[in-house]
Image 1 (cartoon, helix red, strand yellow):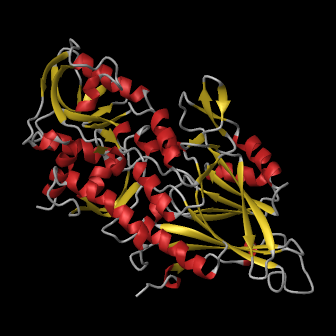
Image 2 (cartoon, rainbow, N blue to C red):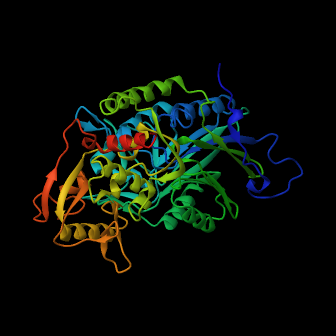
Image 3 (cartoon, rainbow, N blue to C red):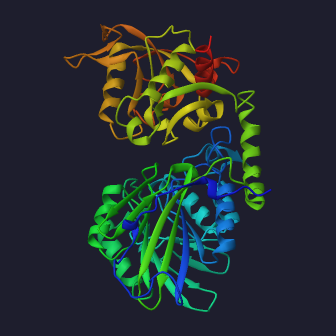
Length: 513
């Protein structure tokens, strides 16, 4: 039996969501010449399958929601407000020697027949070559008003390149709608992205200027225009202030649901990883030009059925994950920890301050060596989940946190080099080289210490390092041939320290005893 959708609706319906408050002798949202649209919004979706043991999320469920609504309302559209190609555990796995890098997401979105996406900042985590591959694989439309491709010929739109045609991203897209009586209308959608991920192949134009420009172009071809944005809430609010006739912004970036109002503009954001979707009902009166909007948050839970078509594609990729994870841990779905307080795995936090998830990781690294170390260090950039974990934590969640894995090295080094490493990590605030630490801190004088003892230049210390840090990529001078390094111990494959994720799982399981 098909599962009911209506049970999953969490209402956010109020009169203040109505736009253009005018009074007419007849009901402006009923009668002849009135067209109903359903705009379904998701944002910040990194996982294609349900999370937390299948409790919430899952793009096959989102597809079922869209299909069920479209059965009743033909003018139904599915939009994604950025951040979907990275980060993800599947994206870090290799197929035929190459990392997946978001291919799984394009495969699923194609199966969903999604209508429109815009770029998020995480799309540009990919190399120029890999992003172009993902664009070329897309059977759907991308839109952006402020992001351009830096090429030898100058700034050009990013483009989907097929065998016989090339389709550049446009400043906006338009959609036609028609009702049962043959009445027609058209609406436009523009996209903008915040410039938080600078890359040499990407140029970010001003958010506000380009939003205004795209809106003014689109409104000439449409009855009304809405925004599909991946910017901060503050930036969405500023867009609404500048575009006072903009009725709706479908936004992303914050990872948790919200519904705000700025002037006449509704600003909506759903929860990350499709834990929820926003369903916007737009009722447009062709005669009076009156637009009524009702926005409802719908939780995506195990009470919702899945699209069989999309589920087949999702399963193809999750089977790949299961096979590769079982090479490291026997039961990836086993609950190993319960986080009563959220573990902060967000990029911003782990690249700028000490976090509880950073402490958990580094404690686990030390535990892998029976705590016979003076401390532990890992680069904040290795924490890739960009989300908060709360409640039951499974082994697969640990792989989502640290998808690239790597071993834990036990390194003997001089105190002078250790202090230099710690200082460098602190100065890299905001970057991936910022260090998450265990047992290392600064006293009131700014001196580095381990425990309560000041680090001495000439003394040798034993530190658990993630193996990536010894490659000199984040900390240029930290390489095996640095004269300050006395000895490096590399664990063999049978040891817990051989995989940092295995070390964390081992540590968390020890807390149960």
